[in-house]
Amino acid sequence: MTDLDWSVYHLNALGQAESVAALGSEGGAAQKASAYADPLSWLVFEAVDYVLDNCRDAVLAAGQTVGHIVVSDVCTLHTMQHIARDLGRNRLSPLRFSGACPGLVCSLPGQLLRFSGPSLVLSMPPQDGLRPAALLARDWLDSGAASYVLVSAHDTDGAQHRARCTLLQLQTEQVSP
Image 1 (tube, rainbow, N blue to C red):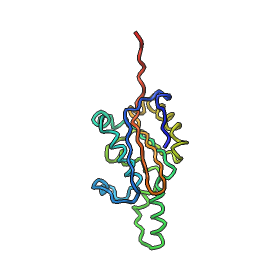
Image 2 (image 1 turned 45 degrees about the vertical axis):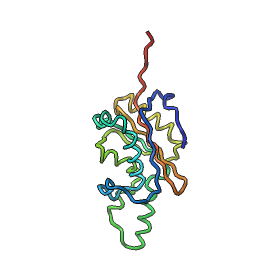
Image 3 (image 1 turned 30 degrees about the vertical axis):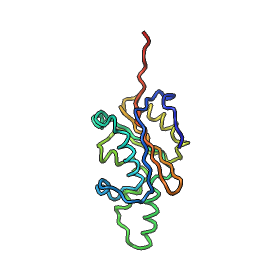
Image 4 (image 1 turned 45 degrees about the horizontal axis):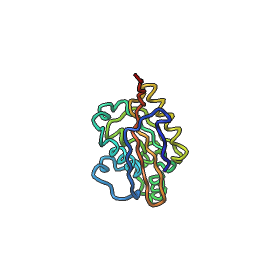
């Protein structure tokens, strides 16, 4: 996965965390709260949860202005494939469709952590999408639409999926004496 120098965009990376899993593997107790979320949504949520370890209270207190950008060219393909498979069996719950929307890969932090700032999914590979994500994050932070922005990037080697989340804030300029 492409590493980005966030400081080039006048952004301060407050932390970075990663979560790795085989999608479709057994989930934890938290997953029962939203059984129809795509497995990638849970992987992104786990990376977000990890990145908050050192600054959870401050970020949760700013919940209404915490933005989230996810970059993934896979998005909810796993759930879409399951819907296609289940159509032939006539055993499809309409609730499955809600988890198939590609934009929902960034929904669980909003739902479970009560973040309600701007959110967006860029449906492209991280190597192509992280620069536009940095520009969007900078704009959201500059305009006051967000006080923090989470940028989650997803990639896969086929079997293993990896979500890397970076927590961003505007760089504060230091004035020399």
